Length: 318
Image 1 (cartoon, rainbow, N blue to C red):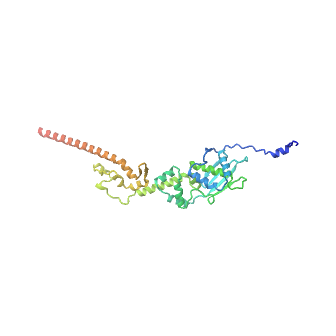
Image 2: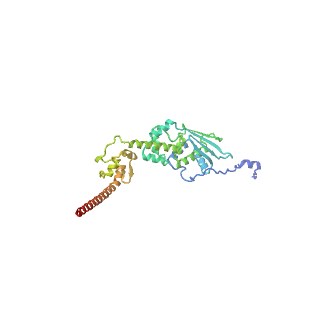
Image 3: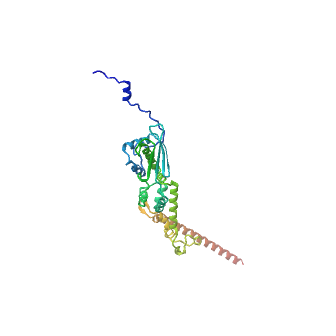
């Protein structure tokens, strides 16, 4: 068998000479290992678009994110703009549009929001809980956009697939954002975080203030009024029940707006919890007041005795 030699022409046709890999200096992320996103909200976001793409495309898109191919992205109300470096020298432009909530939908969100202290605290801390998403869904609102009805995707690459790896890379990057700032989801729906939180706090404050207004101002027992300083300086004694101050206060209904505390003893109402603290304090305060009253009475008696003896001396001198 004669030895076969390759010509230079066949050699160049047989072996593919790869183009030099473009070095990317895009946005760095810290998720080299483990789950790509960690929070519940970010997982819901990624699951909502992964069903429209193949696992191989998803892996390439994740590698794009890890290898810093996403050069730039910004979340605006109702849209996302980004630049992703592909195999070509010029980066690709990605434009994603998200359906914003109408004013009527935002009004529904604010008016039906559960005005409970813990729910408000969650929002102030920047948390979107599954309970809130479920509550909005029951009122016809979807916090997480639907990729069929709420989102349109655009990329200027040559890929005919709607969910190309450049678009997927940006969507995964947005998921990483939701890990640290869930309220970016509200930006996509049309409002920034500060506006949402301020409106919710105003709603909660108004609700508490309305609950604090007494339906009928009643005289407290023993003609003792919490708002009457004259009674205090007259020395009138308030009732010994420590919880009297709370239950007879016009602010009591507002206090109950804060709900129950899940303590280690079990679930206790706020007024019951305060009783545990104020009972010994009130008892100690009554003892101190009695001791002070005794001192004042003793001092007054000594003063009266001194005045009476002085009068006797004056009379004897005459």
